[in-house]
Amino acid sequence: MERFVRQTILPQLGEEGQRKLWEARVLVVGCGALGTHTAEALLRAGVGHLILVDRDLVEVHNLHRVSLFTPEDVGKPKAEVCAEKLRKIWPDAEIVSYVAHFGPELAEELVPKVDLVMDGLDNLETRYLLNDACVKYEKPWIYTAVLATYGMTMPILPGKGPCLRCLFPNPPAPGTVPTCAQAGILGPVPKALAAIQAATAIAILVGSGEVRPGELLYVDLWQRRFQTVQVQRGRDCPTCVARDFQFLREISRSAVLCGDAVQILPRKGGSLDLVALAERLGKLGKAVVKNGLLFAEIEGVSFTVFPDGRALVKGVSDPNRAQALYDQFISR
Image (cartoon, rainbow, N blue to C red; front, top):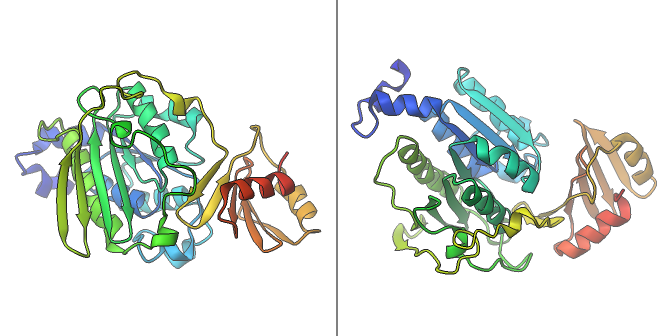
């Protein structure tokens, strides 16, 4: 307990609360700025078991807002880099990383095994899926989103208050919600919102009764403005009332990411022979296999292809166009 002595003297925690944190299993979905700051805050607070999931690579534009990443990490999987850095902070903790798309299969596998889920995502589509999984298995999670100079966060406690679909009943059309690549992001914003959601997570894990389900907190750091809104549970919510988990059934192959890229999923499972694919794509443009990934540039469009067939497509903003290019050059 010596490591956490300044925390255990708090009446809100004490040694019993600290033990609960050590025993807790927390899933962090997304290891960008929001996810890494949240994971680090929870680890330093004493959460003993972290599961990290992210599908993306560290890019140069991440460095202005992610304290764990350095220039040497560019091009490496975010989840692996985050796990490596966190293990150095506290070697005694159990930290597991998944370099994977958080789809229905992985959600069904991981969510039932944890006590709490943290939002480090950059798109609503995956958040609806996460909401379905957490409501289905009655696991608390904290919705948090950041953009430009502001962010918002809301604790979701299934059975005790509203869920994400009570807040946003209908998913927006793909590509219609602005990302940080379009609207920008002020560096301190993710860290501020991560601190708030981490504090909320600690309160949930130690069993505090002070967490108010459905209390949406809006923060604009530039204007130094804080506002709270109490979200009501929808009487006809298809998720938390009707318990129709449609996002666990539906699989969209495309998703617009914050880094101005479109992720495309393969039609079938399995692994790709990246070397053979590089030889084929090399006849059409530039293609090289590096650090277990395939990097290609064809007709002004860049592809980062993972061994499981996933690809990040840059140079096009239309998800349908990106999927068509994937099917043309990479599809199997």
